[in-house]
Length: 103
Image 1: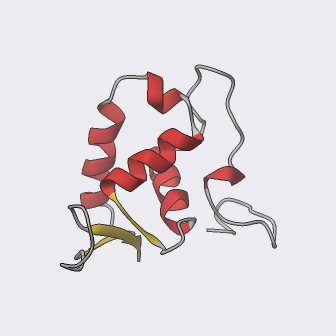
Image 2: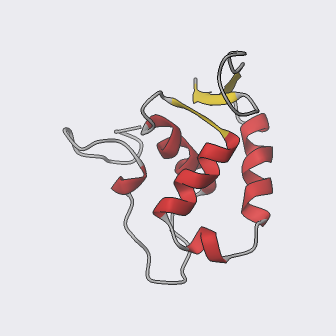
Image 3: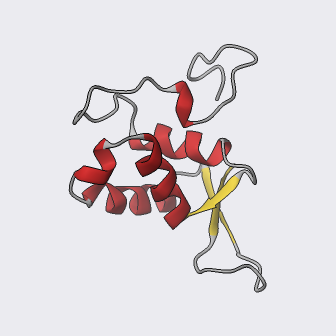
């Protein structure tokens, strides 16, 4: 990810490496990039679908205020792109849904 997104050494790899767009504007990065950075930057290196949504909405105001179609696009992309791997949630873990991590 560091090379793909030209992230300097020593800079943490997460959603904060992307520039903040002007208010009301969508970030220039693709949804795939946003999801990769959200997962990679998470403490466990894996997130549930709801945690992915929350990470993106917390970082970019645009996604809190726009329609929710982007969430369907992320669900579809996670299933199609081989870089994303679904792993079972342990029975003892709270919540629902599998975790997603990077291959």
